[in-house]
Length: 270
Image 1 (tube, rainbow, N blue to C red):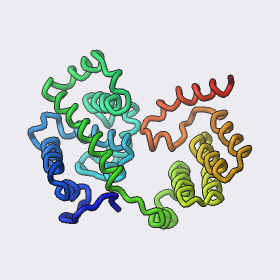
Image 2: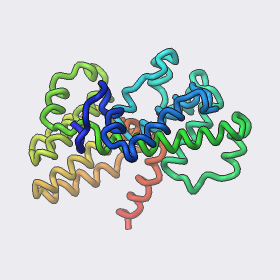
Image 3: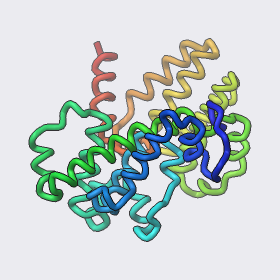
Image 4: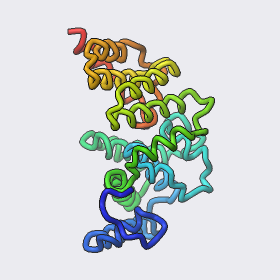
C-alpha cells in the first residue's frame, strides 16, 4: 500500500506515481525513459548489473524483484551481492561498474582518480557519464519507491511469512524469515513473540549477530534490561565469519560490517 495517493492507470504502482503527480513526475518519467533508452551509451548488461546492485543497497523490494533482462539468467541475479567472487558470471566492465555504484551510494567522497582510471579501461567518457547518471537515478528513485510506495501492511506481511515455502530447508533463508517475524512482532508491540522469533533465528546460523541485536532490542522494550545487555554483549562477542546472512541480504556486502564490529568491541572493552 502506497503512503501517498496514487491513481491507478497501469498495473504498476511505481509507474502510476509519475502520472499522479505530473508537475515533477513527468520530468522524472522522462529521466527513467532516457536511462533505459538507446540514447544511454552504457551497455544494457552493465546497466542491469548496476541497477540490481543499487537495488540491494536500497533494499527496494520492487527493484530487487524486477527482472527486465531475464535472458541474463538467474545466476546473474542471484550472485549480484557477491559479484567480486564471480568473474565467471560478471565481466570486468560489470564488476568495476558495480564497485563504482557501491561507492557512489555508500561512500561517494572516496571516489578518486584510481577509480576513474579503472573505469576508463572499460568505458568511454560518454559511457562513464551514462553510468553515473544511471546510478544516480537508481539510487534516488529506488529509495523513493522504497519509502513511498512499498507495502506496509503488517498483518498481510505476517500472513505471507506464515505461509512461506521458499525458506524451508535453507537455514540462511529461514533465519531471515524469523528476523522478519521478529520485526513485525515488534512493530505490533508484541515483545514476547518478537523474542521467540529471534530465538528461533539464533539457533540456525553460527554468527547470529542481527538476531541477537533484535532480541536485545525487544528485551529492552519489555523492560528486561539485564537480559537485553546479555544479548547485546553476546552479539559482539562471537566470530565475524561466516557472515550473518542479514548483512549479506541488507547490505549486499558483509565485509563492510567487520570494522564496525571491531570498533564496537573496542569501545565495550574500554
